[in-house]
Length: 573
Ligand SMILES: [Zn+2]
Picture (cartoon, protein in one colour):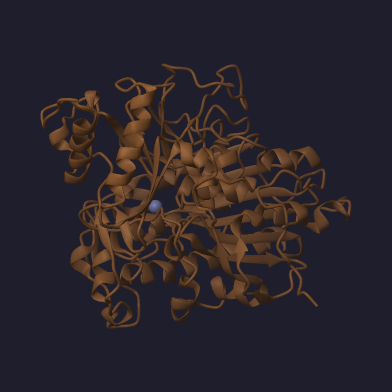
């Protein structure tokens, strides 16, 4: 695959002029703090894919920075929204309110996207205190209003009023949630009428037109470098390619995206290209544009700016092909080159002495069950969610497991139902990972309690389900910490379901994440920049300590985090 994106490379490499006037004590010399979040990067990738890396990307960070080799999330909800919210705010879902990528709002009677909250139309930077029934859930309305507690941007601006705090990502939630409330701008890519478009929203006071002009780079002609004819993603690993993925099961790859199941993958448009490593190449160019347009790292008051960057192509192709595929190996080889370009750009623009950089991931991923089974490891697929809209579907449209759950529950409660019963009248309202919501309009309080305990014992006999907790149990502290950290009564359902290790909540092909086990919960954590002594910390560290670490480095207020203790950035003697 050729590098389609030509933008930004040369114009950006202008050395920054010395700015002067910065009080030395401010942020210990840091002028730009950068948070890089790779969507769906497992902790073991750094070692597994090291043979494919050059010297200027991941290897540079591990050689010159501090490597936390055993960093993990303690929550159950190993998804993009909760992960990015924790990285920025230092708060688990019980306090950040980000209990999933989406949840069902009983108040609104509809699903809520974690990155589209109750925006106040009266002005930029304002959220409504309450969700309002009937309020639009339109696109381009992305904002951090669903996030509770003090945000990274609020902490930074409390200490440094002139600091700029900006997020950029391929997904709305990855751009919006790390800086959180009070950010100056956030830029992300949405699916528009004629393909992907770059967006900022009304919430943000400083959406920059020069950055938004980047949209031009996503037009098919520009994106494909003037060659909009059929493009493809081919394997760049040492030949023969298959040698780098000996245990993979390509027949279990997902091909609904139009990429097909194996190399070379046809790339018919820009939307599909975002699911290939080219998407993160595009994002890197966009990040350069953001740094230039907002002149990050050189603010006149000498105060530190903060930029978060969310690479997400890795998640798209990771879901399609799984962690043992040559596609993922090749994708990280290419991401390493993209990262090298970003580091080179930042160093030239801001200077290493003025940079503080953290690279991590929002979650990992579970192998394709077909790969685990081939290795003799127990694994499987389970389908708890709905693929049909509630307004139009019938019970017969649900997965076989969901139909059995519904009919058994109806029998238990003495309610008549059959396959033709509309989904609007079911006793189980829906499943939004990891919560099962009962239909509170059809059931009174006593029936909800009875249905909860009935379903709990029913589900505990289903192969692949490892644990089920009712809301009453969680509220009384009778659930594991991973569940308690992911739970809020006002946003979660009546039951929380955990799978057995190796199992995924996904039918068909491809794979996913969202469980509290090593595959999904352990991620890389690299800290790099001026004054950071190289070394490896191999004790287990909680990912909630990332935000206090950034706070300590920048001299911000350090109270109110889920885990207040910063990570050790110099060798312990
Ligand atoms: Zn994902």
